[in-house]
Length: 428
Image (tube, rainbow, N blue to C red):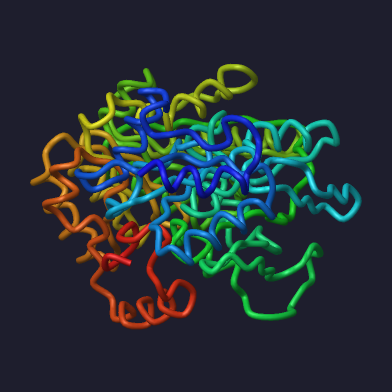
């Protein structure tokens, strides 16, 4: 096994750029093992210092038929299917530089290993921001966010990652560097590989650079929380959908999640408005009045209280003892969101898209909710779960008719099946 590390050390060059598995921190070993089918551990973890070094590492893996698991800072390594027979783990966390920030054009290009929080800090200096709110923003890297399609609640106003991604550079499975898209908002050149790579979990190539459109920071922000009986919350959501109000974030919350956040009793509709102060004040009060007319309890959060509330919300879903719970991503038609939340203790669903997160302790509940989601034109995929659950259940639960097409795409991009094999839909 040490022969792989010896082969890669001359490529990356710098001291500690290749770490033998037995020398990796125990916490990092545990995080990586959560992504692997139980069995043989990888030989080493490699930290290329540049896009070119990464390309050379992957080219060597391609020649030798080494199976590669790619990651950034490992914050989402335990998402998706278990990866089979990994020889080497390749991390992009050292490929993390700012490439270009076109402030006036509202675009930014960065390397994939840059932390999301660092990128937001760069943009904040120019009163701009990247309009998505991923899981673990302090740890998540840009490449990992794109690879897993981890958008968050801001998709209510700004759309998904696919809508904000303008261009990518990636390393192919054979080690060649390729590009798609560009660095301007109006760009139609070439195939739209950005959408293909978003949410592909590193199975088609390794993203090394990304270009996003960014947005000016809003002047003021306020959040309205309405709580009460499920059918009344559903009526409030329907009224909001048909109104002239323009929230930037809007989530439906389950009963236990509402209680754990100290927001009251029953289900909740949590709606955030961001704009100039006059607009935020008018919209938030109108939303509060809408709820009160329906008989819901309501409150307006602003400043630090509001920031803390939105920070705590995803933590209630994701911050658990590793391996102790099952976290799932779902999608349903938005009108079915409240009915789904009535079936679970902890969950949230984005009001506009019908996408959401659920948290379980019983794998039988997963199958029951999957049936409910699929009967409502949706899906349920397992993000994190104990090994025995992922080995027993179909993580993705895909029932569509595109599996053959997906396998053909995988064959075109990675004919030797060396990139994160088994992590994506259908064992891809």
